[in-house]
Image (cartoon, rainbow, N blue to C red; front, side):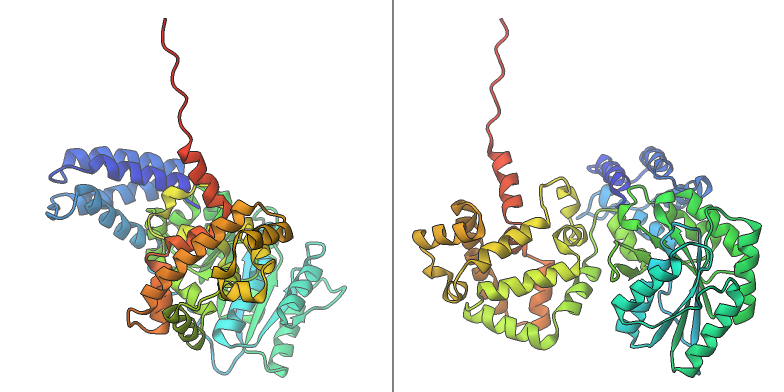
Length: 475
């Protein structure tokens, strides 16, 4: 996500390092590169022009603090301006009383609207403790109703549908009646999309909106379409008066033009972002966190929130006690790896850590976690509890059972022991259970990550140790 833009920004900041003062000349040079980077990222031209002007105005005359460098001052200024560009945003859904709260989803065909409706239902169920009803009101696309029913079944969320009916207004009204009768807090309408914005499409969705008067209208846009997403948002807003935009497929968007342009062009905030295909890959949008990711500074706040979702207070305290006593075993290690998978896996976690953006080319594969699990499952219960029992003969047996090399087993055990010692020291620091986990995720967790990455990290190290071939002497 935003890899090209992040690299360009970092290049600009490095060019300013070592300067004693931010001057008009060096700011102008920097803004020339920033402007080029933004345009290459498919950011709207007028948005780019205004953004560069705002950064330059904010930077002019700014003294460089003695302990900092001009590049660091510019990072702060650019971060603030990016946050302003994409915000302000309130990602909350405001529910009406008495309910149900009606949320209408609109968008072009192929934008991920139906899947996003299901993701939103999951988020509302788990984080808001609400009882949503999904209404299958996309009567144009073949299999749209079937897709929504399948997703609803996976989530345990009820779906209202009417087979053979072609009147979208009728289905929406009946769905609302059903929700009121059966005690649903929220109604999520999945409306029809088209391959492009046309009058027929706009008339139908406007009629549905007029019939049920939704409390929230969200436009679902494919972030990978760049300015096309922004233009469609503008056209929809002129007819529907949107309450917000949901950007899908943002994890696959290497440019970021839509995320940086949509708020400025339409005046409508990004409410949520889709960061993957799984049904829990829908996140509230926070401009300051996104600015931090774009500038390669990670997103520790989101990382800790994800950790807290997987580790409750009681579990964290038990884990801390084991760490303090040095009794943290491979079974505990497996539980942590399973939690990591739920958090999005190794690759997505790396992107949220400050400074880890530069390591994006390393050979770290989430598949390595499965290989580690295979090794651990080949151990006996006693060996998992006390890795010191594992001598050379046991390592060979474990390697055969897991279908791995003996070196893989030895490397995992060595890294695990080192990590356990680090955890013991960290857990003895006097902080609370969640505090210990926060420390593990936000500071000094490198050894644990090495263990998680397993063979992938070792491959990188091996490559870096290879000696360069001497150049042939010229005759």
